[in-house]
Image (cartoon, rainbow, N blue to C red; front, side):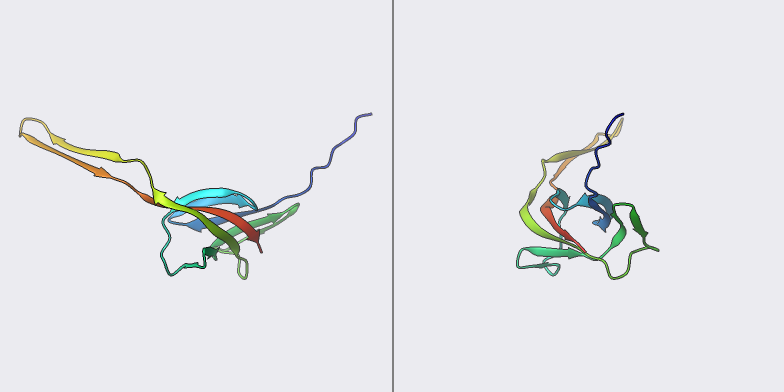
Length: 114
């Protein structure tokens, strides 16, 4: 007879920020779109757009968000990504433009799912 090892149920959540959705759990480090200065207080940020929370076998789905639930995180790093070259070109008309873009980001560490 084989033994079943039971893994401790982890708390998962799906949050929405910057027009994207992220599956997170406590301790995760995410690289997300830059947040506004109003949303960051003392190096901490709270995500209120929680779309789903799973705690073991219990799953709560939002319509569209789960009311009363939040995900807390602390800002680890703030920076800009690598440069992306943007080239516009039209043949036979001598039109050529080259631009660059560096997208700002925040790295956050998920501290609490409540």
